[in-house]
Length: 240
Image (spheres, rainbow, N blue to C red):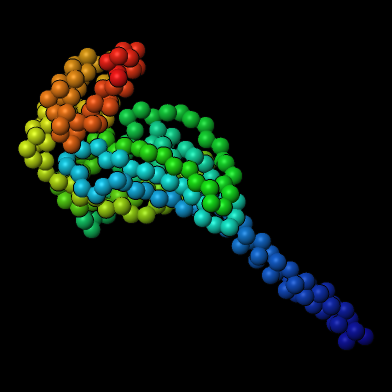
């Protein structure tokens, strides 16, 4: 009697173990599939069109989010600095990377919703590192940059590749333009556009800079910024 009772009690445990073993591979497969379709499995890349810049020269960067997997993954296209879902980190030589505290001179409040990214799909944004460059790159030398992108809920993230840039001491007309930027704009931020809106003194400085230093490495950035300012002021002929 005791032998039969013991076998009866052991039977449910045996069945549970059998069911657990039979279900486990399927559950593991579902878990792997779920992990493969998370935001962190997307590919985030940062690139620039050249590797050498003089001090205070704005740095154009291209940010690309791609789905290089075989699964559809929720992503988004809010790669611009003003959306506040991108962080950029910088390090000089072998120093520990630190976050650039402010990327955009004009932060925007935007609502970002996930977008289903099918295999092979991508989003891209072109941005400009132009704010507080004297603090971000305080000395000439080699620097490393990488970026981190967050999902719309800021709960998951994906890190980019590392980008190497070399900051040079300006010479000739570039040196004169560099000294003008330091002397005629707050924190040498004239080319970021941060203090231009409604600031006649800053606008005068930018107009003078474009007239005198249009042939410097900063010239194209300054001229484009001035054109944008004229456009906002509805001075379309001057903007052209």
